[in-house]
Every structure is written in structure tokens, then in C-alpha cells.
Figure 1 (cartoon, rainbow, N blue to C red):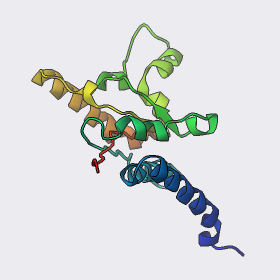
Figure 2 (figure 1 turned 135 degrees about the vertical axis):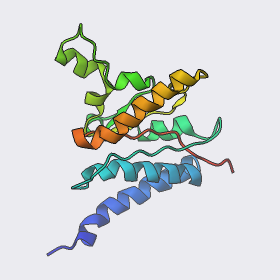
Figure 3 (figure 1 turned 180 degrees about the horizontal axis):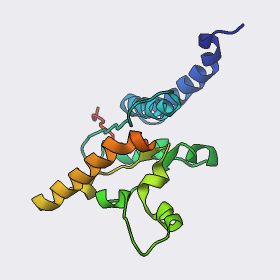
Length: 167
């Protein structure tokens, strides 16, 4: 009879190898960001997860935002089952309610159906922010509502903007 620890050894070995490669090719800070991102992705497998999980990395220009997102991005069909990279969106694009579209078309247009049961990866949040206070309030109100209700509908969102210190 094998224990959970014994069953996890091959997975831990692969994770350790991936993180070693990231450290070797990039940096220890980027390996930490990738490790955290993989943890968020792995949380999809948790039973009875009560809420969606949002992880936001923050950092200055050149801190590794694009690199971390690229390393976590779904390139293989198997990975696309659990992750969706979306680089251009607004708060309103989560649900459009377009009356001139069929439900099938809305499933392809709206973000919520695309990220249901997946991790959403994005390298930028700036498209949500506006210099106009009214527009900013609308964006945050929509985003807050989406994130609060994602669990009820079975959605999982991760917004990623890596927080990496420059060495």
C-alpha cells in the first residue's frame, strides 16, 4: 500500500526540476513567482474549494511580468484544459449581455465561460484602470462582482502580474 507522500514523490521531483531550470535560465525570484503560480493552478484540483482564488503579482517595468506569464501560459492542449491566457480585456468583457448574439456566440465572446474551471493568466491589469474616476469605479465594481460570484458559478480566476525584485 502506497502513502500519499510516496505517490507525490514523482510530482515533487518534476516540480523541483522545473524550478531548477527556471533558476538556472532566469533567476531565483522568477522561480519563486513560477512556484506560486503553479500552486494556484494546482489549487484547481482541491475538492470543496469555497471561493475563487486571485493572485496578483506586482512589480516595476522589466521585473519579469511577461516572462512569468509566458512560463505559465498554456501551450499544450492538456494545459489549455486548466489555463487560459488573456492579454486584452476590460471589466465589462467578463459578461457582455449582447442581445444580438446567441448563447453559443456569447460563450465564445464573454470571458466567464472561457475561464470557467480554469486559471486566467494575464500580464497586465492596466486596461482595467482609467484616469477618469467614474470609469475606474465602474471597472472595479464589475471586477469585484465577478470575483465575488465566481465560486457560485464554478468559476476560477487568476489575474497575474508578477512581483519580482530586481537583484
